Length: 374
Image 1: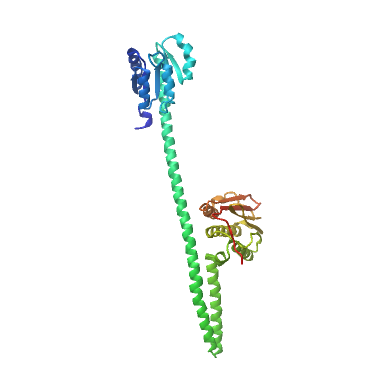
Image 2: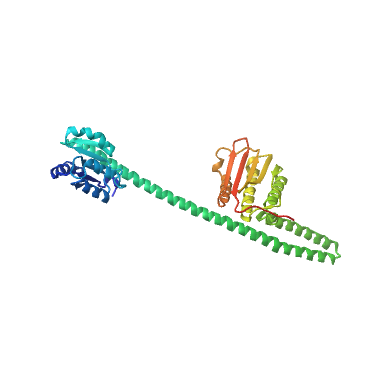
């Protein structure tokens, strides 16, 4: 049933039966649930048992009067915000109006009641209750949807983190297989060709053997290049600092972009997962510079704070143009952010058109960096 069509409950409180009967007759055309109470105590019990849209409360009642009843109603969570209209029997009781508002009344009606006024005011509060109920339902649904969205995002990030870890493990495994297995085969093949060349006297066959040796050498260089692209040996053998220095030098040779670096001593060794994450982000940053920045200079700084490792890469290129954040280039930025986020880090980008781009990567360190002494 739609919330707007659902009946609400109105509590009528008066110690005189004839007054309750009159109220019920006047309000029954509204088509709502009318709940009757003959005392303040009974009104409190009703308010504790169900939600009320409105309370019509007589001021003068034996035992707990209307003012005390209203004060007690305001003390309960369920009826704390339920509107209360006081019913007063004589005009001289209007001097108590201020007291009634103090205990939570929203309005006063003087007996004998004017049916049109009573119906009008009650109708307003009934509709207000329905609107509030609808808003509460929508808020609850929105909160539930937001919770589901957060849970979905957490699951997606967990999957992304697992994917990154698995991909890095696969790269390492493939790089080692290519370097070790294929490299050994090519080395053995070259040794066999050299052995054959030593036992050949025909000039044409010797030239062919030399050509084959050259082809093997080219293949070995290609294999090393592929293995290095998958997982640089320098990262595993010498650590992050040396790997960033090596990658910067290779980038400068390949692109001609002048690179300036500020790095810690190479004896400083960081956690393996942290090193891999920062290095992969650094590679992506250099790739973006080469593809999009049109820069002539790149400044690279790697520094260690008290508990974080910070990498800053700045270029003097064209900056991020308006709308570029929605292009395929932004996927690389998203990938960097996900890599950093899985370790609790951040990637901050500062860029303006024509003024270059500065990217700061900050990732907390699980443990202190280790100094390796030779």
